[in-house]
Image (cartoon, rainbow, N blue to C red; front, side, top):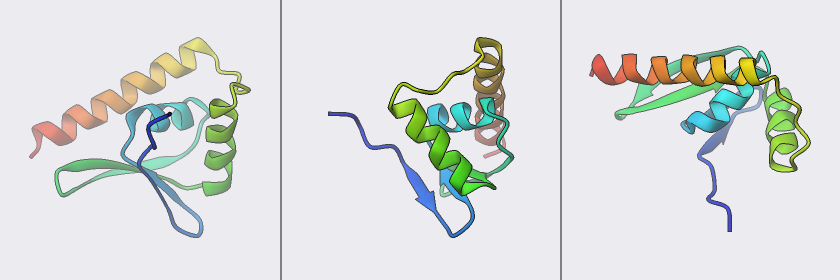
Length: 88
């Protein structure tokens, strides 16, 4: 059984603390901000519907991703997490 990802939704935005989910959305050019709450880095994406569609396609193994875009997104998300962790 797949582990449930930590996602939160508002009417127009999607939030996640899962770096894999964030990286996938970033690789698809989704705009986001990051913030630290209670010691956890959260990524807030502007377009909830687009992110839901991307995540669904990924789960269904239908998402086509450019390797370089995904690698760059993973590095970007990791850098943000490290910056927030170092700024306690």
